[in-house]
Image (cartoon, rainbow, N blue to C red; front, side):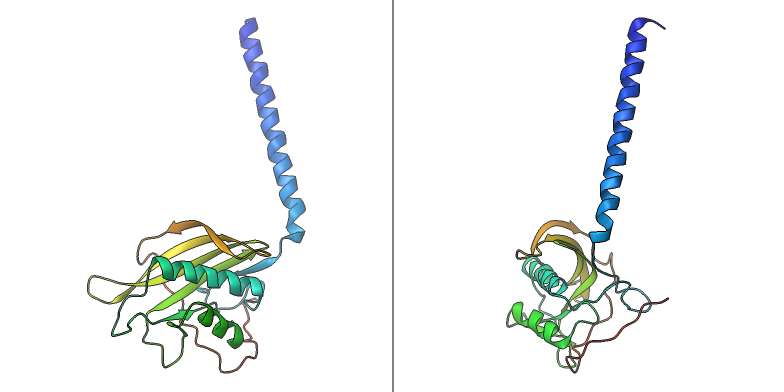
Length: 202
């Protein structure tokens, strides 16, 4: 092998070694951060509807979900369906306490209602999967819209938010085609403010 070939080979080996060191450093930093990475994760479409690791009754979940719904309502206004005239319902994560549920609806304006027997006919905005990790959240929202037959269909978005000590705000959006996600079951306003007990599969 000539001198230029030996030099190129040495440079290549050095680059590979540098890349391996960098990857190892990133992995170690990630592992070091795991014990402090606490939060809440739910996927409402699970068969049990339970909580794998946490409860929705925290300020971070309530506030980030409220901001996600506000973004969705502003971008995809409620359709006029069967005389709804701009009124709509919201369906937050299952297990949300009555007081938090009502506060979410109040914070979204006078046309927002919790899901009850009186509002079940209204176009409904759903909170789907929720993940909150410190000052960051990933939330699926499903927005009601009308299909070509005049029936309700759902336009899903996956929103990346940041906040925590600061007000929550949407920083990134992934839009999906209509019907790409099925909405979870409507979560009716609890009759009392007692915590709703749910349990995940073993």
